[in-house]
Length: 275
Image (cartoon, rainbow, N blue to C red; front, side, top):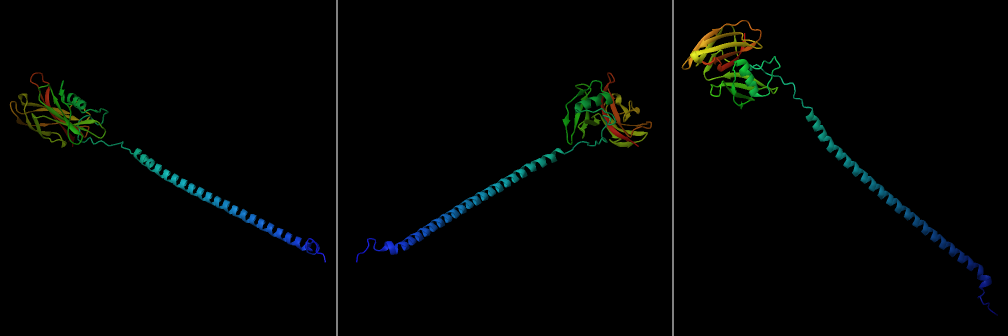
């Protein structure tokens, strides 16, 4: 018997062989498709992971930026409030205590921003010096000080006490001199008519001129004189009658005069109240 060249498979085994080949091809295709699907899913997960990371980074940056802005706002608010508080300070409207001063008259607009200028006006307008020689202002405690006044460069000294009050102006409180000492009335005493005058003085022929002024008066309310010592300090005593004043206070001025021309040499001035 003769055997065919294909081993007999061409007729009896042919269909089975093609089925096996087709099955193998389908299996290979399925594996390839599955691999592709898995690869695509992995790519999506990677993208999603990248997006999540980016979102987290953006959120962190935004949070950091917000925190920084909040700190900046806080630092600029504090100095602004402090500045406003300092600017609202009000130091105007201070009340003046003129109970111890004799010049200028608080009821007038006359004021002095210089102590020597105030002393000059007082010396000529109240005491009666003609052409006084004034020294420099000498400061003391509590915004007060003194200015020396002479009738001439070599004349006796009248010391004027002056104070700067809350308004920034200068006010005369009193005047003193070594050659006139007033014991009665004392400074700021309340007096009635007749008032007793007592003290000691050294003057030409012992004569001391006395003038009582009320506040705002254009001329003395009353005048007199007392006699002390002509060669040395000696006591004096006297009285002064005066009409009813129209103000509540005033000043008592005691002065001595030059033997040559009758000009004022020195003076004592004290504040008094009227009872």
